[in-house]
Length: 451
Image 1 (cartoon, rainbow, N blue to C red):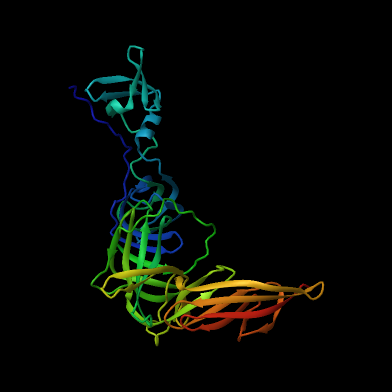
Image 2: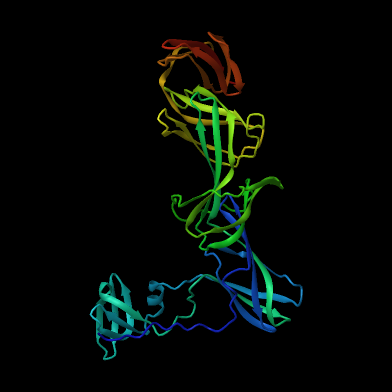
């Protein structure tokens, strides 16, 4: 078998920033945004020169880069910045070498030398040194040799700085920038007790990093809140399944108010690897009292009764902490100890002392039905409509069903077989107690007026 030459890569000589930062801090927002601050030792030459600052995320916003020397001695001015992200790949190498000489070695060790004319559709076309045209199946190619790395191709995303310096030598510098494709959300797990009266709630911070960089031993801060952005950024890539669930023996995040948001700081270093979802305990499990609700909303679902649990986020009830937006999964333990998923819901940012209502699912043994039983035209602009809501309880215990009826236009209740409340301009609400195994029909008349 013929021994073949290795690919030769030639790079222009220039100072290169250390790949590993001496210190790195990452602040992650729940809006597809991360702010990174790195301290690195950089080598400068007095006068004008060029420096390559490597190991930056492929999703960096180059317009957000900020640079400063830390020791205060001398002055370095960045005259020009170029962000290079045209990375080396087989397709890029072939593309750059059209009309250039290359060598191919097939699986039998046979060498093909010539000028690359075309590639794609599973073949490579060469003009041989004798002028003949050769078409080689790419599936048969074991090795491709290129004389050098083409101009413009790099192995990692890199910031190239043209600078003017009054000093020479190594200096500590802080570089900060923004990146997308890193975000976090809260994930909550709630466990109901056997009587559905108490809820054990634990919270996790789930950090999704597809920014194109691993942040090693970083100071990690999370911001909960909705900051104003000039433009919505679309998250690239599909949904990732959780890869890591980390619960440390150390204390969890330290929470504090920051401007009009809440900040969570991890009191230890953490590594946020690229293409990984990392989960860290947000707070210690807390127990709070809850109440279960049965809710019938005929405008949303005309036959099913929604089941929800609610609690007030207060210290007296067992919580009293800011709850960042996120998904809540509710479980309940069976008599044999197995844990059963009851349902999931999403909460918005919830400050302390506010009520939280979680939709769990729909009641199996409670049946509801709404019927419009009468409609009378009183005048050209006035109409009366009579509704009946039939509630059937097939459970072995009584239930209270809250009905929320959405209405339209100008309306008033003319007659009702129950006590009711006008919740707002479009919602009529009332509670109906349905004994075990029985059926209750609620009847009411609403007058609608068109102005």
